[in-house]
Amino acid sequence: MKVWNMTDYVADARDATAGIQRAIDECYLAGGGEVRVSAGDWYIGDVRLRSRVTLHLEKDAHLIGSRDLSDYDHILADTLEPIGDEHKTDVIWCPYAVRSEYERHHMSHRNKCLSTWNRAMLRAVDAHDIAIVCEEGSYIDGRDCYDERGEEEFRGPHAISAHRCEHLTFTGLDIRNSGHFGFVLFDCVDVRIERPRVSGGHDGVHMTTCTDVTICDGVFKTGDDCIAGVDNQNLLVLRCYLNSACSAFRLGGTDVLVEDTAIVGPGEYMHRMTLSKTDQINGTVTPEDAHKHRRNMLNAYMYYADYSRPIRKPGGNIRLRNCTVENATRFLEYDFSGNNPWQQNKPLLDISFENVKATGLKLPMMIYGDKDAPITVSFVDCDLAYAEPRVGDAPSGCVARVCHYRKLSFKNVTVRGLGAAAAVKAWNDGSDIVAGTLISDAEGERVVLTDGDFFKPDPERD
Image 1 (cartoon, helix red, strand yellow):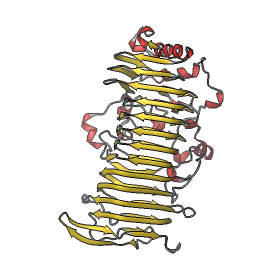
Image 2 (cartoon, helix red, strand yellow):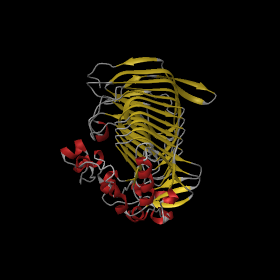
Image 3 (cartoon, one colour):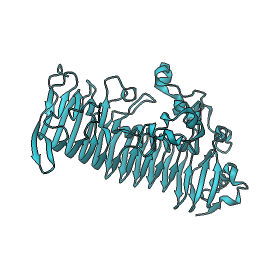
Image 4 (cartoon, helix red, strand yellow):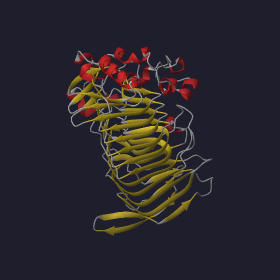
């Protein structure tokens, strides 16, 4: 593979954007190869990745993001592979509650790759066979770049973004302090993210309408969701560590397998929405205020199906297997009642948990299905332990509140910390659906759910 050395193109490490772009462009025009970034601190805005080009960060090479938003608009002037006006928009993010019907259903600030919402340090559009490789000690640091017109009126550029790309490989990436998401992927096919490490920032990986994605051996310590997205098919998450100040998964899709993964709260990094405006602008955390900010992990798994774009089909065949969960407020949240705007597009049809052990849970699972397409939920060989409620907290009282389900299945499921309370209750009146049996063992009292399948009762009941 032919190699281009970035140092041959960059005169000033404090302004390396144009030089790195020239090296990538020459590599692309020559039919592909590898662009190497040598050790040192290289300050960049946005750099466009191109087909058949590998960007290789050598040991101790650091790509450091500018905190000046104007440095992230170079892609608008790209003449080598110009992007059509149909992919541009001046629409900016605005709160869900005040969006017009058009904006709520089309979300052009996200879906059009040349919106300000889609600014990023490293960007790929309509490309294929791209790779980024990071050696030991190399990293990509977004420096929590601030954008007063960004999402939640402070989020800035992403670290890595890709729109309509195929055959992407990211190996060993260490992403720190991204102004927005670590990875954001739209309409991509065949993506492999190996050994990622995402620290701080917001979502670790956020995917929309992607197919055939593998995320393996990763460490995510994020201020927002670890792995998130809408309408993804054939997703595999293997051997990851997920630590979040929001949800470990906020994810919709079909044929999703999560295996051998540890989900751990509270978040090592706070949700930056709770910072003061001054700290958001400066990209800092005032030390004396650090304890005030939100770090609790809301959900181990939360379904996600909003109206950001059409969704190909209802969610289903989502499986979590051989996983552990520590200190999540809820184990599972699925709310199709109409109260949660992020879950109202196509419903979730089925989700299952096998050999999952959870400790430190605080609230019941929320399982409110679609009355026209009720959900099936299955638990096999699971152990769910609830924490002692803090002063002022209401006890959880049950494992789940459910409505509009097709089938609830429990096989060898142990629940701890609820005493003799019923395991599952109907949403509206709190009546028992699944009873438990109180037993005693060396570890103390626990509730064992009666093995069996519980089918939807009289529709009038829920």
